Image (cartoon, rainbow over all chains, first blue to last red; front, side, top):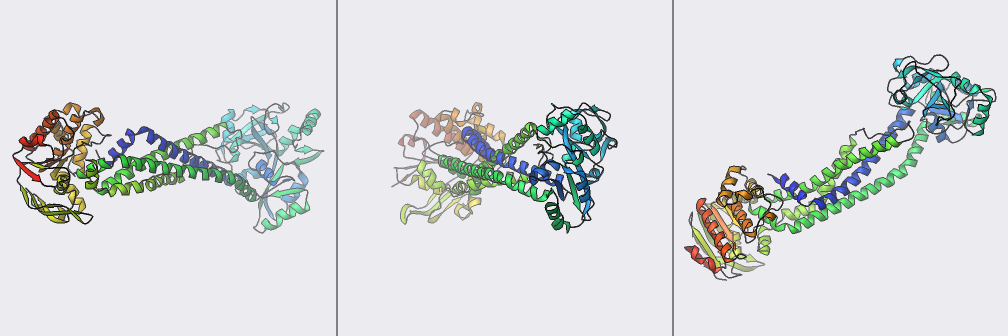
Length: 406
Length: 210
């Protein structure tokens, strides 16, 4: 039997009061946990996936859409660009590396990206099984694709037209899996890689298919008899290129240059408005929970002032009474924070399960150091809420209190 | 054992209690009588180390208690003085056993379940050891309050109006228990009351004039 036991049993003796406080604290911490996990994961994914890519060149349109489609494989591409123009840019002395991308098909929602071996070195890909694609219609699949679609080396499958859905299947050519990538913890875990020629050939075949595709407005990598690609991922040779190259592309070609860093920042600032609003809401809830803890402790202090005085007569020091009140608040806020963290992770996991896009999958199974700050914040709120009642308990005038009651 | 020397208590500049010398020996049982407002409770608080007088000295076992610092005085009170109030005021969230164990803890003594069993058995309350206070009758709660006061084998057992809210039967029972426990623990007993029903139980009496 000690001070902690009394605090804990006191809380247990008033379950409804304790429950209300726990609900408020855990609600605030849940929102903060979800925001922390989501913003960190989105930020990390933005950084991981655009790492080493200085610029994306594609068809004119929304630069954010170009970045989302060519780096994060989320949105539809802005269109296609002529291969010869792309090759001309790739040979520019300001460019260190240019990686072509030809998009247009998917397999079970995973995008099929036509590219060349420079993509391997750009993302520093390594194989878990098999080998990288070499011939037409050979594919190397990301770890998540292999797991979700039960693909092995030697498996065959048909791609479907478009970036999502499987209604329009290209039955003319089957892809064959030649390799499976090791987990890369970036977007390449969720894509199917092949050469650009495979994407072109897949779309060369039936005339009616071409008409259908043109009719739905989706970009085709091969149009008007001229070879086209979707975009070009560019690495600069020197920092000087940052100023010169995008301006040159935007002003002297029919293509647009979009900087992943700038667009990611823009995207994050757009999301940031919502995050900030929710964050303030969570702070408000935490403030309300602090007031609630304060009121319940203060009321219990008023009701139990005599009990506290009796404890003093038994030998309890003023510091012991102070600790008793503080501990009650700390137990409440600590348990509330842990419950909040648990639900925060659970909600993130559920969001991840129901997310349509496989490219930006969020998870609740990630634990971060910053979560300790959330617990610490929760405890601090408890201590702040308890400080006045605790000081009152510390100052209990035993004789006066006992005289009043007797 | 207990010496009260020239105690003066003031409240808001006015003298509320003036008490000359009083000496009580170990094991004696005293009744402190007086009408309401005569200063019985004030004197009991001063004797128990709960209220520092403006002047004078209180010695328990040759220790001038108000010369002790707050923390030491708290510990001294827990170890050497057992106090019984008019209302039992047990900690409602704790069981009977826990209410006694916490008294040992607050006094800075080791928690001794054998002692708890011994005291509860002597008060015929051992079978209620796991009950919460709200499951007990008023009389049973008062017994536990007595058990709590004697758990640390105090040298001085003080009871402030322990019978004022009790009927004749319970008054007698509570006084018998206080006397029995003080004898059992060789403690000096001082009972403050305005209740004339209890006079015949005590050989030593002190009447406070209000």
